[in-house]
Amino acid sequence: MTGTQKLHGPSFGGGNIFSQIGRWIGVLVAAMVGLFMLSVSAVFAFLLIGGILVIAAVIVAVFWIRAKLTGRPFGPKAMMEARMEELRSQMSAQMGSQMPPPMNGMFGGASEDDDGPIIDAHQTPEGWTVER
Image (tube, rainbow, N blue to C red; front, side):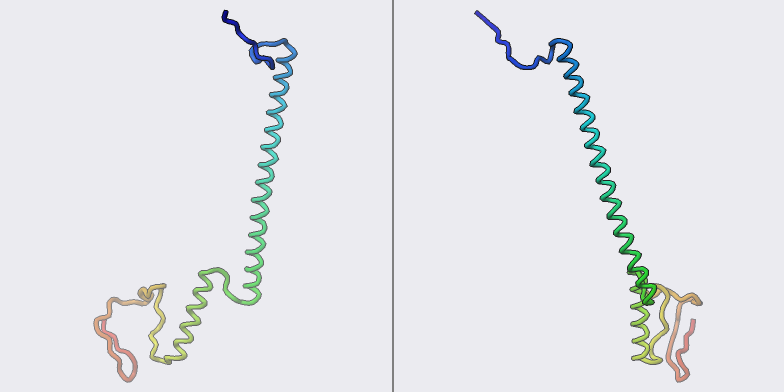
């Protein structure tokens, strides 16, 4: 004898009309709650990112205003240029007139009034003589 047992519990394949309506209402309520939670978490994330950006902007503004009021450079490039100028002035004070003029560019590129390659240069009592 082969008998089948029916499990007790909700029947997903059938049931009366009220159980199917209840199931669909439950699915709709769960979907609405899920969308609400998704929107709440998205708003929280946007507010968090916006707050971080506002704090960063305030910090940059404070340091920029402080740099303008004290006359110091702001930013890594300006700070490096100011430090290089300070080092140049210290070197010229130590070396006097022996120091060559500052070169154009970071790695000593040609100056703007360059007439070509230097063929011969030697020091005379009046200064340097250069043949091009």
